[in-house]
Structure formats: structure tokens, C-alpha cells
Length: 552
Image 1 (cartoon, rainbow, N blue to C red):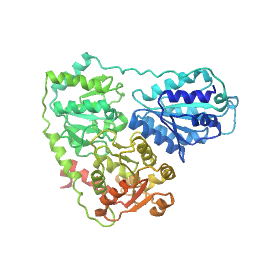
Image 2: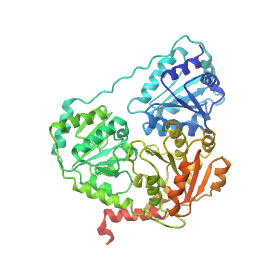
Image 3: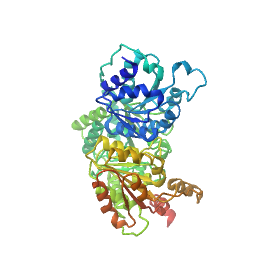
Image 4: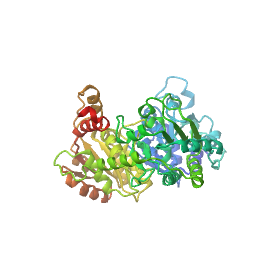
């Protein structure tokens, strides 16, 4: 058979369900082979970056890789931002690129560049197929690496001449393996350390949103009462309604949850990636006692020097600790945690009944979003000032129901991500939130959503500028540079793409409008004027919360 046919058959064998992308001349053979597949669906996108974000969200929600496809040269460079985002946020992904014929790769030639070399820093592995007989091994290795802890992106490049070559090889059968588990001796050490603590706290990271890990974490908290501070990536690892949910940590500034970690005499990090919330922000003196439990050893850092490292399958590690708790229950002084939870709960509800006309507060928007979305519905955040508000004010019942890009932090994420979320879970409501800056970065995918008749709602917060940058500049310099821009007529934009369109100008109308949009068939755009005066007010308020004497 032809090499491109074998590549498709290998992807089928691995259970690949979707490939998102923009084809080109150099991967035409692959596209012809893919067209014959009965099990892999190809989704044509309007930009390769959108394709990569779609594959990322598919991977986050399923734990299985999807493919994103581009041709050589600019097709590959257009993919790289979404690929880097996926890799840094631990989402499995297969990146499939075409390449020119091998006879011209050694010299200056049309659109030729070193794609493998370019992708090596943003993938777990990147390789070119130079011999069609190696395709079964390459695909098997790629999928294993993409899925393995910690998950990430893998690139397979297929030159146009290799795609046409004949091969007699057949796909390899996927054979899964069980992850290694932590041994009893080191688990006992961790348990002894836990027994000496009076005010322990859990810092839950990205690894805790895996289904089995979340289940064991909840059991551990039920047995101990220890509170959980979630990073942006770990939202929903414990139910927001549980008394041990201490909301989210990860803002650059001090906040109410920070007080808990300041007061703790032991920090138990679970599935924590340093990129989520750097230890110098919560352990600036490097003196916190830390138990590190994760799939991989701890990153070396002066502010992150664990006394015990539990390296292995995270769900099994928590199970092992739960087994010890059954025979030796522990108790702690957790009053400060319950006090903080009560204060933060009051803070979150403060603007629930706002009736402002005109600019609408971020706190009110997110309160209403939580009211209209069910336990398993999905909210996706783009990157911008709204992301910080979502991180602080939107909380979850289940893992993977609030998706935030937090490692690579790329704008333009939420619209293509929402399209993929609807493909994975067509029976759930899907709400994407973006600023006017981020939304327009991949606005062309509105056509993709209309073509697929995606049941999604995009909620755009309009402030006519790059709000997060102005917020940060004002914090540091007491002013900001010119960051303003113009916007389209949103309702006409929606109409031109075949979307439903809504404009909300009064806070009291927001919930009803969101419910109506979420019930509509096909994609809907909802826009509102956001009151980003609240950004600096929050900065001031956090200063007062953390240092009350300075503002007397």
C-alpha cells in the first residue's frame, strides 16, 4: 500500500477520532488517504492555529490525542502557537505536517524550512518519516508519548515523496501499560510528615483533573478535612460546594486564599506544575515544608525543595494515603481555612444582585454564568483581563468544566476550543468567554462553527483595548500606554457569519440573555460592555485585605 494509506491506517488503529486543519499541496496524498477513512473525521478550519486549539481542547477533555494538520512552511508556523499551548498545558496532541520532497530538503527551496527543528522546543518528540516501513513504529511511539504522563504534543512530518512510496508494513496493535506507582517506604515517610503537621493545606495542580486522581483526592479530603487550593488548571478537582474547597490560587498578587498557604505548616502539592503558580510567589523564603506528589519528580528550584517526593501515578498515591488513614485517622487545626472560605464565599456573592445600567461588573457576569451553567457544562476562558476574573470568581463542581490556558497563555484560544468542546460533548452547554482583543484573533473560526452548526455561545467582554496589559502597566507605572482599538458592529458580524447575535447593556438582562443563547441551535454571540474600572479597584481591595493597617 501507499505510505500515506499506512499512516492513516495506523492512526485509525490508535483510535484517533478527529483531525483538524488546513491541507496544502505537500500533504495531498495524506488527504486523499484520509478521505477513505471510516473512523477519522477531518474538520476543515480557517486557520491552522484554530486547528491546534481544537485539538488541544479535544485532548484536555478526553485524555486522548486528536490531530492538527498543516502543510509545510507557513502552514507549520501557523500551527506552532496552539501546539506550544497544548504542550505546556499537558494536553495530548498529534501534529501532522507535510514537507517538500526529500531531494530538495538540503538546499534553498520553495517554502522549505526545518519544521522538526522548529517544533522540538514545543513538543515531547518531533520526527520526520524518511522510510515508509517505519510508519507503524513512529505512530505507536508518537501516541504513547502524547498520552503518557505528563501528556503533550508530538510532531510527525511526512515529506511529499515519501507519502507516495509503497510499503508492505501493517499497523501495530496498541498495547497500553500501567503507570509506575510510588513504593510503600516513601509513602510511609510522607504519612509520618503529615502526622506532625497542625495546619496542612493542599495545592492542587493540573494533574488533579484526571478523573481517577480527582476521585481519590475527594476521598482524601473527606477523611482529613484538609482544604484544597486549586490552580487555574485544577478547577473542579474538588466540588466548589465542599467545605474543603478553598477556591483558586494563582493571581500574581496576594489574595484571601494566599493567607491559608502563608499560615500552613505543610504544603502538599498534587499534580502541580511550577508554571501554574511559581513557588517564589507562595514560598518566597523557601522555608515551607513540602510533600510533592506527582507523576514526575519535582522541578529543581530554590523556592521548591520538597522534603518528600511521591513520584508515580497520582491516583494510586492518594489511594495509598487513604488506606493509611483508614487505620490511623488524623485531625488538624483548620479553622483558618474555614474562616477564609467563608470570607471568600461572601466576596464572590457580593455583586450577585447588581442592577447597573451600561458597564457591567466582571463579578456580576461570572456570577450569572455560574447560575446558567450546570454541573457538567463547560466554560472556556480566553487570555486577557477576563481570565483573571474567571480564575478568581468562577468555580466548578467537576474537573475539566472550566478550561483556562495557563502555561503558554495564548490569546485566541476560546472560540476554536469551544467548537472542539461541543464535538466532544454535544449534550453539554458550552460557553466561551473572550475579550474583544482575543476574540478577533481567531474570529475566522466563526465560519467553522457555523458550518458545523456548533451549539456554542461566545460571550465577548468589550472594552475597546488590551485590558490586561493596561491593568499590569497601571499597577507598575500608575499609567498605561495607548492600548485602545476599534471593534466591528458585533450584531452585524454575527449575522454575516450566520450566528445568532445578542447585545446586553443592563446587568439585570444578562442571565435571561445567556439562557436564551445557550438554548439556541447553532452558534450564538453575546456581547456586553465590561466595567474594567473594577481591575484597579480589585488591586486596591486586595491590598487592603492583605495589609489592613496600611490603609487605615
